[in-house]
Image (tube, rainbow, N blue to C red; front, top):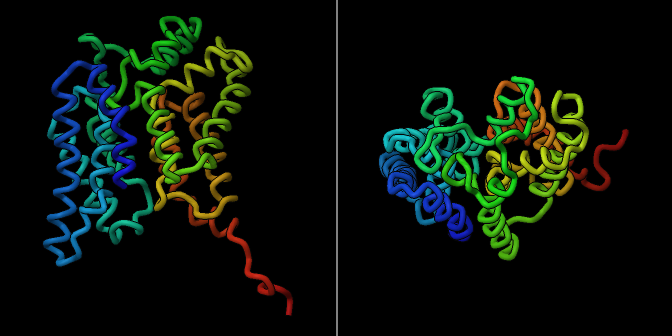
Length: 301
């Protein structure tokens, strides 16, 4: 888990630099510390083995912080960390027993509970919409989908968004670290990203102002929102993703289709968090279908 934290540092440091705000740095530190402290206190009170040295709680807290707007109040990060560790993780038995990614579970909880604060973004001192929200607004207004959207800014990260999702380059650097260390492979994130690209390339043609396989639109969708952070760092969570190779491919395809469905036809411009959580719930079914049957078993008698 320590290497996951190291791999998240490029996105973390870029996010703090990008928003040029000491509040973002404080939010990251406090949210991460709150997750670790919550796990320690719970395990101490329940007389369980203290597991904070495995860094899983720190990873959860850091991922949650990277999924928060840079202007989110400190207390919101604390509430989210407590929910992630206590409700999503520990009450279901601790590491290895949780049925969904704790950081994403907490993000969705905060989004439902504090919608206004979770969808308020500031970049360069000015409040404004994220690129995906701009695209959605353009489509609904009947304008060209990419009006006011710069794909290069999205690639570099000079855009509004959550602390850790803005720079594709920083996220990919972290992903390369995980791949080189053998912590993740390309099955889930690769299948997820390719499926999503194909989905929006095809079905984007049915949306006014986009067209089939609009390269600029596809690039904006791939670089925007939490897709890259989710694909490389949250969809690949060992606990909540399939263990079989076939299952991982099916899981990636499901993620790509759901994210595309939510973004193109849903009520939100994002959709990654909901796609991953929904897919987490289907992992037992995916594994049941894709687990190889033992030789000589299951035949007719």
